[in-house]
Length: 339
Ligand SMILES: Nc1ncnc2c1ncn2[C@@H]1O[C@H](COP(=O)(O)OP(=O)(O)OP(=O)(O)O)[C@@H](O)[C@H]1O
Ligand SMILES: [Mg+2]
Image (cartoon, rainbow, N blue to C red; front, side, top):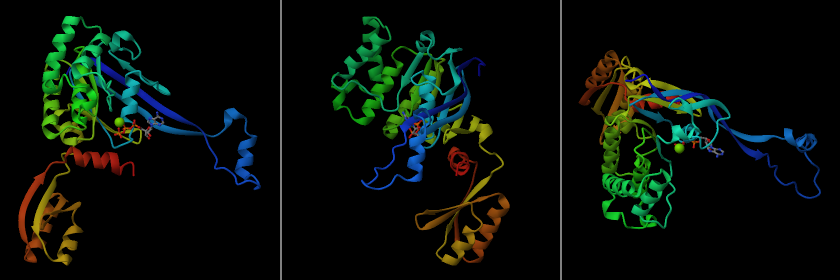
């Protein structure tokens, strides 16, 4: 991996102000409450503001030619961070730089392709027309617009619908068109906010392949996602964000605990007392058809579960050792740590 940082985010904070507190209306003839009296006495500038601290000091860098995954549950602050990075909103504190320049620098933005979370695409244009329009915005010549449009529309699998108005596109088709427009200017950096959302499994695979192709061409990619299997397949490094704070950051191979050797033991157990006894030793218990899968940590516990199950005549269907997955890490970092 080259050491050149394409994206540098340094301790960014974003506080959204939702305006003044609105107190419920007081029924006529009733006296103001103590809190209402107190607020009435405050000068206007000090009145209580409702604020949302969407991002609370996030820092990370993305290096040239890597695919970086930005993960977090709903409302974690991913889109807000990406928007700050693109100069669409401004951080309350902290700084974000692209290609070593301020995010508002046109030189930095010229090299950027962006797929927003809910691409707003002008509904009355056809796919081809919309691409032509976006091509004008990024300053492509008429020849290049035609060439790139037909290449990209095919590449995202919309060849059959290129002359249909966008309002007649399905959700997944809009997502594909959004991706095609992000690629129009042959950007060095692609920022994709949930590129797999709304896509069927084939579409997801196509997008994964497309992202890998871009990487092969030397491009840098940052994307947010909830689809952990896609992240695991694509990313060099990841950041996990939860409630505006980063809870994990680094190479997947370093973050996934090698020591946490989990073993899944599938048992055909019908006896409730045995099921509870085995569950007490397990980290997780999941039904699997008529059987139950007990996930335990460490070989000694696995032996104890197997011994106990067999002693009670329950059949062991499968024993599968498993390294920690990104899903385990996500739950461990994003959900458990934040409560
Ligand atoms: N313009 C805004 N004004 C006020 N609050 C906002 C605004 N935009 C986002 N927020 C709040 O900031 C927090 C983070 O939102 P954000 O959209 O960044 O989450 P996200 O990680 O992208 O979630 P999702 O996975 O659902 O897309 C949420 O609590 C959200 O309500
Ligand atoms: Mg979002």
